[in-house]
Image 1 (tube, rainbow, N blue to C red):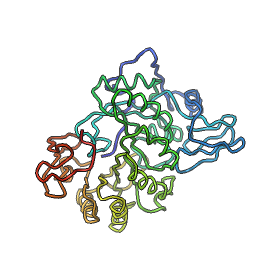
Image 2 (image 1 turned 90 degrees about the vertical axis):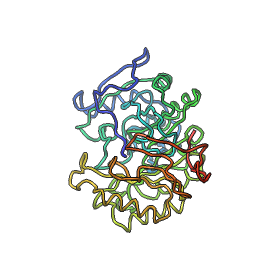
Image 3 (image 1 turned 135 degrees about the vertical axis):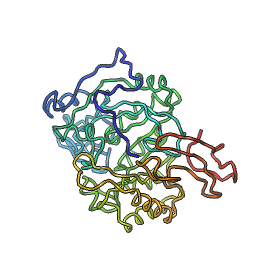
Image 4 (image 1 turned 60 degrees about the vertical axis):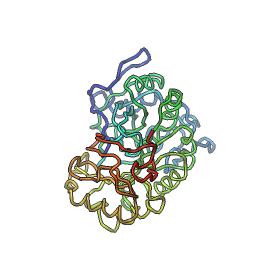
Length: 379
């Protein structure tokens, strides 16, 4: 189940402008990429995830580790060197919505709960199938056109509480490149008893994970493929993502992994076995969501993932030793692959239809029949 940002012009659930909130449009209809860049630069502040190297700065927010000269930008285009100081995004959102936590997707986190999802601009990848390209690729693509709203962390947390959300999630664009802003929001959220989440491509560094760890509860990684060749087409490398998954599995942060199954790109049996075998080797308790592709953005040629291909990939994941495998983006068509079953006795523990939880029988994090512990955050 791929997360979608709200479309421009949609009513934002729970959005009630406060005195510290202003709105502006960003995109081709309001000017050039240069004017958008200028407006975003005005909404920036000195960052924390970098080291100075003379007048250059080495950014540690993502696996690219950009060495940025004065007046230049990192690959993400939103972190830039101003006179020897790294400036980073702050104080705005380009997407803000209340979603079920299952939409992120997290299936082992507070089933049926709501999350306030927020995003900014930019990404360190350039995936041709991105479904959030209006925010992630706004500084690369003239066709992108999406609203920007200045907002404070206090207002965002108030909106989360007003909507009944229990979680605040950084998503829609790549949250690693806006990690300082996410931490600022998460600190306020934690103070009000809310939990926090990242929906990320996983192209991290040890420095950014250490920075996030005190403030982050849940992390979803998109493991997009299992070859370096595929990752280079997307603008990255495979190894930093694998290192992020290994690191998260050893930290006090709940981890789930998603793979969008794209025909002809990552759907061979060999690659799926390698990918799921890696995950099972890290921990067989990592929930793996394999989700159906449909043509989007600049990838219009491959056909949508078929039901049979999706279920076949899910079966390979189970054969590889993963205890919790889910098939997504085809709600109501995948049978029990939407549900959480006890791997010990087979009892159906959580029944779902798409993003909706129909029944939840987990008691105290355990199966009510056999008492087996079910990994996750259930209360």
